[in-house]
Structures are given as structure tokens and as C-alpha cells.
Image (tube, rainbow, N blue to C red; front, side, top):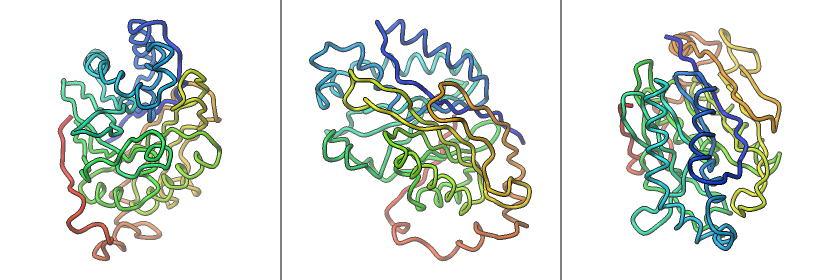
Length: 296
């Protein structure tokens, strides 16, 4: 089975009103053209441009104000997933949940389903300055007509535990929507994504937020590049790099991912990373994370 995936190198944009944002979003989805479209972490923060200037400068206040736009945000992406017959991983959104704010990636299926994955490992900026908190330790494997994928949002992909549990539960593709300010931050995400691809012998995909937004202190400076990675083994490129975009250039990076190669390499690779780690376990594995399967 081969799946067409497109990952967005997405520029944070100032919008005059919600209708302008919705039209801009539809243009991006239409141009994506894949069965699975991945947007970056905190791409939803461009909606801060719709708020009054005093709220744009207020890190906590803007999150509370954005929550009023959450339902309309979801309605737009749900409609686009149906219209363009694809699965969309929308830009992550700061969501108020049970008295705290979590960083959530909504997933919209072409048949109308909606699900999500929240971020577990928080950066210092998120936790100390923005007061965005870790989610409940629940991992989702999203089941589609073509196969299964999981999501590890930005900093999460720098830790092996989530990817290991998701791959054991059937994920063949791991998506890493990201938002980083510097080359160092972007490098950490990509090193993590490449390591997860090697360990689990599956595909990993990175989508970055790019560009500057001086009107939004949460995403004022954004650096990154999109990429597709595999394990560096036979059947795949020697360095495990399938595709990469030049940094800071807006647009989609598309790829055709052959999912049948995942099982082949796990059974008969030059190394057997996926098999070798089974049974060893992780210190966080038992009794901490729950893994659920969600049909989208």
C-alpha cells in the first residue's frame, strides 16, 4: 500500500478577518493534494491576528480569547477534509481542558470523523512562560483506509517512549508537527525524528512553522524545514533521508510512502532495531501511557 503524504512548511500569516483565514486555509489544503496533509505545531496562533492589539501582546489572554474560535476552526478543517477527500492534521491549537491549557493537534477524516493528539513533553517556554501544560498520557493511533499513523508534537518526538508505543500499536508513519525559533531547536526535532525512524523502522515526517509574527509573542520568530525520514537501511536511502525542503521556503513537500516496505525491513533489514528492542521495555512504559486506536 502506498500513501500520498504532504507536509507543510507553513508561514505564520496576519489575517484581516476569519473569512480571510478560512480562504487562505482552503488554498493551502487544495494545493496539498495528498491523502494525508500535515500542518505544523501552533500554526493556529496566526488567528491571534484577529484579536485586539492588547490581547495580541498578552500570552495568557490570547489563549483564552482563541478558545472562542476553536469550534469555527474545527468546522473549517472538517469541511475541507470532506471536500478534498483527505485526512488533515490541523495546526496545533492551545485548548482549555479541565482547568488547564494543552497543546492539541486535531485530526479530521474525509468521512467526517474528528480526533486529536495532545502534547505530553512541554518545552520550558510553554511551561514556564506560557503556562501550557502536559496532557494526560494518552497516545492515539489513527486508523485510515490506507494504514495507521501517530503524532508526536515537536518536543515529544525527542523522546523514544511515545514512538515505541505507537509503532507497537500499529503506526507505520509518525508525524512531527513542530514550532522552533532557532537552528538548534529545529535540529533537535529533526535528530529526534531521524532517531525514531531508525529505532522503529518506520517513516517520520516533520512539518515546521516558519516566518516572523512580531504581533504574536508566542510565535514571533519561527525557523525550520520539512522532511521525510526512514531508517538508514536497504530498501531506503543510505542516510535515511527521503526528502527535505530548504529552510524557510513556504510550500508543501509531497511524498509517496510505500507502507509495504515497513514490514519487509523489520523482518529482513541489515539491522533489526524494531525486533531487538521488544521485551526490553522502557521505564515509563508500564502503567503510565495509554494507547488507543481511533478511526478517522
